[in-house]
Length: 329
Image (cartoon, rainbow, N blue to C red; front, side, top):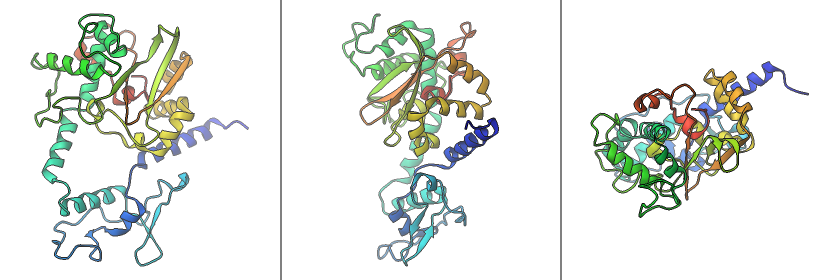
């Protein structure tokens, strides 16, 4: 029996709430070794310095049930026997960070610098700039979509052209655009040298796919990206992965029900009617599985009626989710 509209809305709401809460956590064994106030004395090395700062927030009596309906275990074995409800994800992550710092595995200053770089210097800003330029420059767009055999110069005779040369074309354009003060709106290359030779972590082997009319197959397509294994993703272009991208639910349903996933995003963003109309005109919805060998970036269709806007203005229309394919722009 078909579900009533109210039932569909409730189902989508439940899925959206899951996507907000789902994410990576510690393994059951690691969680059992960590206390919320630092390293468990029973597991600390002799002579280890005591925890100087308490971890917050305090443990929740509700625990983490994000994996309960997916066959995972929302609880961990307690070292003394029985079961222990896991602390909220934020507390577990903070506990792990403090443990790694205490062991000397990571340098806190370097981590802070890395986070600062991705939050303010790179991330979606670069991806938006690339997409907007591809909208206004046909030669650049063609090179990104056909990196091995571009049709236009200077890309057609580029000495490094190849199946995964899109990264090279993007970097060269960024180097050139950075010579125009204020044009990019962000620092390129980043000051701390994270991008000495490439587009940074997970950005070396990149494939660009475009939404809209496919001249080769003569159909209208939409592209959606996910990573069924974990969370492979071009961070330098899009910023850190959103929690929902890493969730098991998105990784599974983006493959089995991509149109439903898009409609749920649309309902969340009050775009349901527009996206329903958009999907009605799509002949094929292609889902790309990002992995350790290649990452993907989606070129959304340029919205109709925006042809008169300047390239810098066009960036404001582009969203991170649109470059993943979860939204239309």
